Image 1 (spheres, one colour):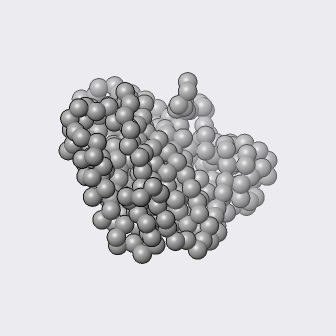
Image 2 (cartoon, one colour; image 1 turned 120 degrees about the vertical axis):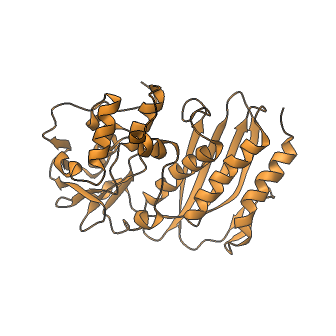
Image 3 (spheres, one colour; image 1 turned 60 degrees about the horizontal axis):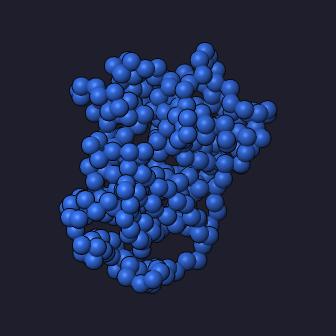
Length: 308
């Protein structure tokens, strides 16, 4: 083993406790059996886990990138409910063969990414297993939460950004393609996706909202079903979005259909919303009926799933 458990706990505590002391709502932070926080709104709670060789590979990403990416996944789920992120609890299993510097970089990636959304890590757990696993429970606050079931006939449909970049990065790495400048944005979005808190918070007037990390089509179908309406999607509006031509160039270089990336990619922490005069890219409308209709789409995209 390359480290002592008490030393790891001490180092991680040092990284996370810096933000605890500056947050007046953290009454009891890291170091006790449980954290105590003050709250006066609804609590919104979500959990995500990342397992080595399923959700990340150490040969593809740095420890800092891995920590940041799993944190983004949790924060995006809170924003997708109209909540403001507040606290994270991190459970970590290690193999015992990691260097202490790697573990510290992982923790720093979590802490720095949480801080960008004004959230703090208030506790967690550490154990040992054959593979590295990171599980984060994130807690947010909201006076008025937003669900997937609020879409109304007459709403416009929006995405906060163009999806597909993360899947493109995955394809580049999994196919062992020669890295070139054309792949830079795709690799960045896969390894260390950027979350813009100001943009995510600007969707609080949406009628329905969700994160499309399981792919645009899958989440659109779930939202239309939950709201008992039809989603009509105009793919030409995606084509006019910033970055679409670049993504199409990446798809061509990879040798895949750009619509498989955009509509079925997965791991894009982009918001899908319905409402009126929302930010982002307007890509369709809500109608009476059921299901998702994609105008001028001749081939159903291949959707990524955990269990194929």
